[in-house]
View 1 (cartoon, rainbow, N blue to C red):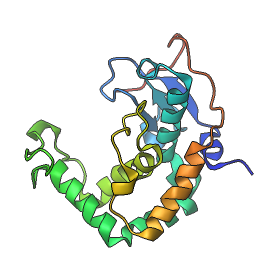
View 2 (cartoon, rainbow, N blue to C red; view 1 turned 90 degrees about the horizontal axis):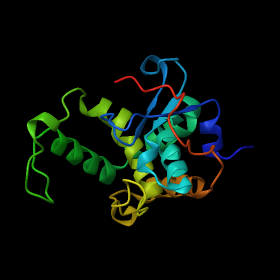
View 3 (cartoon, one colour; view 1 turned 180 degrees about the vertical axis):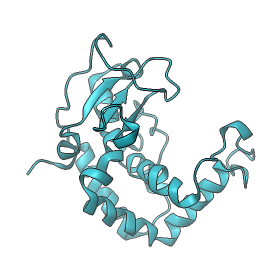
Length: 194
């Protein structure tokens, strides 16, 4: 049986993101968000000078598709997170910072009004954004070539059951399947809709 990220990558198009796109590094699109209805990972190759970081970023974006392609696995890890009071307190605090309810304890400053989360309630934000960030941040923590490089998985607040499941995910992430070659240019690539 193929490993997790090989299964997640199956049937997913990898397309170039314009260098000036507001998402910067890349993003995952599927269903109504995708111009084809099929899963697409958009990536700004210019942000990833080497092949390993390019492929690792694609794997992080593929985690957004786990809820569609591996729903039982995703739901199991998600339910474990929801049942973990230490992690859920951390998630709620993060949401309160992003919505401007409390200042960031590291800086003492509030998120500027124009950058605050306004579209989603806590449950939707957690389900469609934060939980995927947790999985990717845990797997790629400390990788200086990715934006999760500042994460410290040992300091992430969570109980042992969630940590065990995320450790398994990390072991799958660290396995290096080939996900294709980094494009030399974006000639012929379909741009991501803004």
